[in-house]
Amino acid sequence: MRCAITFTLILFTALAPANEAQRLPELFKTDFSGDLSAWTMTDASAWKIVEDEGDSRLSLFGKSDYVAPVRSPHNIARVKDVDVTDFVLDVDGKQTGREYGHRDLCFFFGYQDPSHFYYVHLATKADDHANSIFLVNGAPRVSIAQKRTNGTDWKKGYHHIRIERDTKTGTIKVYFNDMKSPVMETVDKTFLTGTIGIGSFDDTGNFDNFTIHGAATKK
Image 1 (tube, rainbow, N blue to C red):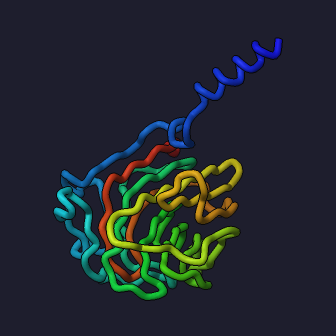
Image 2 (image 1 turned 120 degrees about the vertical axis):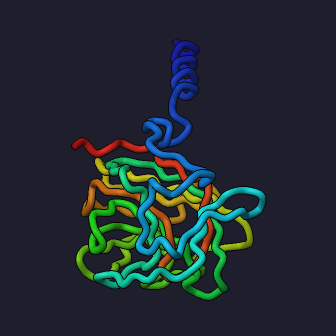
C-alpha cells in the first residue's frame, strides 16, 4: 500500500504545474521584433525599438511629456487589449540610468485609469517611495508591500522579472532573477482586473521577452 501511495504522489508531482504560469493560458507575447501597435504609452515619443546586445528591445530612452493626475510614475507603456484577473507576467529588464537610490524600473497591473492601478517599483534602495509594491487609488501612491528586500541590484545587463497575481486570495508576488523566492509580497484586493504594462517612474531602461499568462476579463 505504501508503494502505491508513493507512486501516486510521484505521479501527481510530475503532472503538477512547474509554476503558476502553466495553469493559465498565454494571452500575449512579444520579443519586440515587430511594431508597437499593441501598445499605448503615456508619451510614445519616449519609446522606441532598438538593437541591444544583438537583439531587438523596447527602449524607454527619454522623459515622457506626461503629468500624472496624482503622484505616480510618468513613463508607462501598456498592452492595449489584454485585461486580466489572475496573471503571471514574465519580462526581462535592463536599467540604463545613473546609479542612485531611486534608480528603477516599474511594472504595472490592475490598471483601471491614470489614477487607479498597482505598480511594482524595483529600485536600488527601499524607502517609503521606492522598491515596493504600490497602490494608486485616486491619491498619491502608497506602499502596500508586506514583505520586500532592502533594494534591487541593477547590475549591468538584463534581469528576469516575474509578477504573479491571484485575485481569489489577493496575493501579489514579485520575483527578480530567482524564480523560487519572491523579493516582494503582499495581499490586496482593491483592483481585481486591469491591464498590464512596463516603464519607470522617471528613469530609462530596456525591456524584452514580455509574456502574459492570464485569465482574460469576461466582457
